[in-house]
Image 1 (cartoon, rainbow, N blue to C red):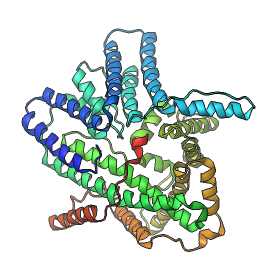
Image 2: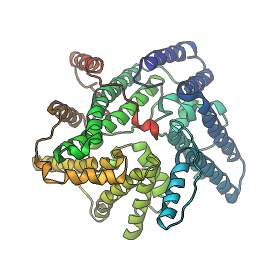
Image 3: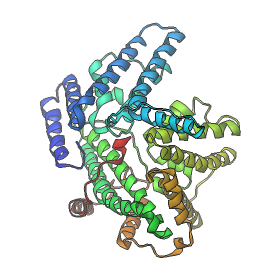
Image 4: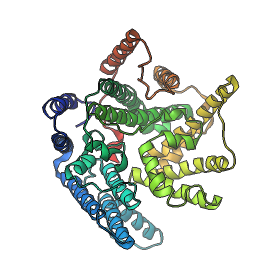
Length: 472
């Protein structure tokens, strides 16, 4: 069930009506109801994979109960190790088995040894990369003694399967989301209004920005050998806004839907294309994943409080793993490596010098130049993410960096102007919670904006496109 369909437009109001009217006096019934509707929501995609969510939930719930007993440090390590192996084992089997088999086959073939690999024909369960990381955060935080185990199985199952963020995040931490299922939720008008704003803004990003940019990006990437460098750069820009509108739009709808149910999910995007350097970009883009890798991979490796050589190694490891998390393709790994190369010099400089921001006119122009340079680097890196192979990505970039880069791009100038105007809106709203956070404006202006956005969603939506991050 997609957020941008009539099915969800019918599903969500029914859920809210039953949740706030029928089950409002019982926290336990509300939680049971959340589990049931979440499983139904996932079953609308493929009911056969409900068993994976159930299995992942019951295993980590059982491990959590063991942590409620007096345990030796060795026993704790064994339990958390089992959780890591189990969850990553599920992820490996369904997402990476064929990838690693094919990679090993190619390596042996390179050295003259022919192998007959065994491949498994499987469907990638939607959202498996998200809910496995979410359950892993529970056992890892138990081991670090950041949280206490929950004995309420309904609460834990609701935490794992919570439908707004089940299939594409944000990846919530147990320490943040689990307690919200144990506290009575009250209907809050301000939360309802902000939730609706987030949903409306998310639909605009997905249906107006992402889906229209997808058509333009696909046309250019599919015919890139015959295009000019300027057109290919414009195509990469269109893809940049396709993936941004697509994923941040999903996150906004997920956070908004959660807010309607009385929950607060973590912010997943914070105007990332306004970043002034690549390190800042990763503090603003897919925050729930980048912070997950920071807390559970980067910091355990030593973080930045190590020698420069070790710091470089830590950064490379994190970005290679992050790239691999996105998909079983070498293009994603290479994309992660490119971002590591972009981030390393920034972090090395920040380690030596503290940066200070001012609001003078000269400083603002410097910020805009930094934003433009950072955005260009991000756009070029997206080519590796979008291209089917690494060789295609290099061929695409080779044309971009030719003399034809300085010609007029053969693309819709109106589309580029629309993107530019949208970025101005983000710049003006950069200190607000989200781009449609207009609570500070007068009521007539607010409602005028709502009507304009609604009109755009209904009349300027592109052809329905699947959410990109469903494949991860």
